[in-house]
Length: 471
Image 1: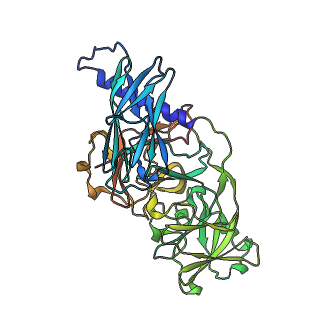
Image 2 (image 1 turned 135 degrees about the vertical axis):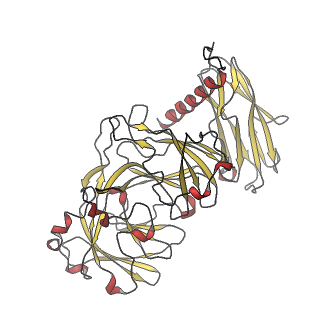
Image 3 (image 1 turned 90 degrees about the vertical axis):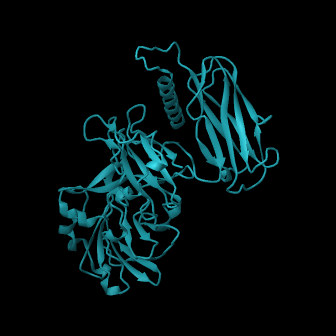
C-alpha cells in the first residue's frame, strides 16, 4: 500500500512537471498527448550503506504498452568501473542501456560494490540521456548520485501508522533513514547531557506533579485524590501547564525539577500515565490517538555519582522498586518503561536524527496543556534548528543556499510542530504555502516541504514530505 502510494505521488509530480513544461505562453495551447517521462525514484544514496549490491529504481509516468530502452550516462570520480564497482546491465563506453518492457510502471538497474569502503572523495553519477519510447521526454529527477556524503534529498513517507498514529518516527535526512517506535513503549526519559533531568512521555499525554513528601512508601492514593483531578492534559485549565514538560523542548523546563545531589531535595512525584494508544477506527480525516487511561504511579529520582536512581511503585504500595539508570552521552536520553520494568533506547543516537513525527502535548493560550496529533518535532537537544519560509516570499523550487538567513533558525522544537496542516475545520487540509529550512547537527542545510496529510482514501496518519540538500 505504501509503495503504491509513493509511486502514485511520483507519477503525479512527473505529470504536473510535464504539463507545465510543455505549455507555451499562449494559454489557449493544448497538448496533443501526455509525454512519457522516466525519472529516478530518489536523487541519491550513501554508497557506504550498500553492503554488496543495491537496485537503483526508475519510475514511469504511465504504464508501458511496447518495448523501448533508456540510456544512462555513467560518470565516476575517484572510482574505476570494473575495479571498484560494476553494474547490471553492464556499462559500455560509460553508458548503460536498460530495456523497457511492456506493461511496466518502472524498472531498475543493479549497482555492485567490489571494494568494501569508498572514501569521501568518491562520487558516482548516473544521468538519463536518451529514452527510446514514443513521446518520451527527459525531465523530473534525471540524475542519481552515489557518494559518502549527505543525501541530496527525496520524497518520504514516515511510518506513523494511520489515524491511531501509534508510532513515533525518527528520521535522519542525511542518511534517508527512519526508525519507528511504538509511542507507549516508554514512560520516562533520563537525560544524557550535563544536567540531571528526567522527562515524561508527552505522546501519550502523561502529566506529573511534585508532592511534599520524600518518602515514597508513605504516599497512598488518599493523599493525592484531590490533586489527581488537576494532574492531567486537556483540562482547559492554564494551571495544568505546570504538570508537563514544556513543549519547546528546553531541557531546563521539565516538569520534574533538576535532580539534586542532596537526597532530601528530591521529592516524590504523582504520575498520571496518560492513555493507551487508541484502537477505534475514526471517520476519514479524524484521529483516534487516545484509548483507555493507563492509571497512576508514584516515583522519586535520586543521583548516584553520574547515574540516576529511580524509585517507583503503585499508589497504594508500601514498598517500591528501584533501578539504576546510567547516563549515555551519545544519546539525548535513556528511557524506562513501567510496563516492562526495562531500561531501553527509543531515539537513535543524538547525532543520527533530525525530526520526529509524533503525537505530542502542546500548550494553548488560555487553555493550558492539550494533545496534538500530526506533530513534527526537530532534534533540539541534538543541535538541530529550523525556520519557516512563506512561498509568497520565495518559491520552494527557487530557494537556494544563498537564500538561507542564519539569524532565522529557531531552537523551539515545535517550529514545524503542527503548522504544516489545518485540521480545525471539517476539511482537513495541507498548508502548501509554507516550507521549512533545517540545519542538522553537522551544519548541513535542507529545505523541506510537506506534500500530503491524508492517504488516498482520506485517512489521517499518512503524511508525506519532500526535501532537498542546499549546496
